[in-house]
Length: 307
Image (cartoon, rainbow, N blue to C red; front, side, top):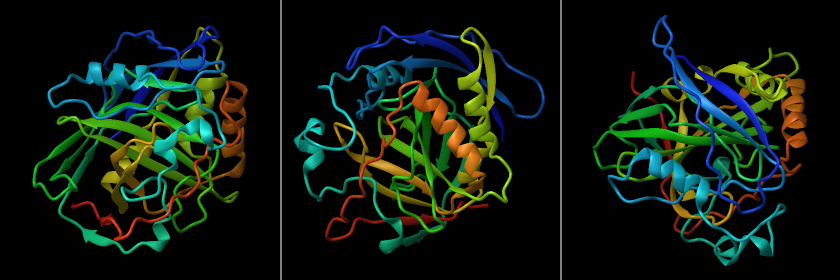
């Protein structure tokens, strides 16, 4: 299933660290042809500010309110690299489990009971350039990977890139995208997509589209096709565990879905996108260090989507 995100690139240099932001809305429109979905995304430039991470909200709360919480959680200013500005919660040792973790050093539990149906999307970032969905498309897991037996529908709130990988997986990952979502019961989950540099591979369409959206003139509208990223969660194995946000306030109880195998792309496509993001305010090393594994080890599922 493919999705196209229309990015309206707007630049607001008035935003300061810790400020609230009411992103502009772009009218959504539908397109013909297959199951394509056109999403409206406002691309906002943070001159020195940080975008705040979501905390779980009460069941029944609207996605619109969840999205507002995502962008307006009041936090003290913090900076990279990780240090005292991150606060006491981020400095605590597990348990509960913090993120990111080294997934090559954990025992995994097979899970093959879930069908995964994806509508693609692309989302925002902490201390970075923000791509914001209003609201984003969804990923359905039936049943959810939580042992409850109920289906879970994860609706995207935003996404962001990290300068290099945060999670450790096999295959020499070099880049990581976090797609932040909220389910219909108020739970927060993050879908992590990783890339590895391979100059024999073709340019990845998701990275190329993100770069085009950033390099377009300020008043232009750019279509970003994100289908190839989230689509993989319905086709390929991925890890699932409960950890934390990787930025302050390092909220725990966050469900993670991490692709087991990184996507191959040229090193130039990673470098080019990083340069464009840095030019718009992304720190050069916006990566949290790998966290120790709690004892006893939390359950880490290796999910094979049900066909």
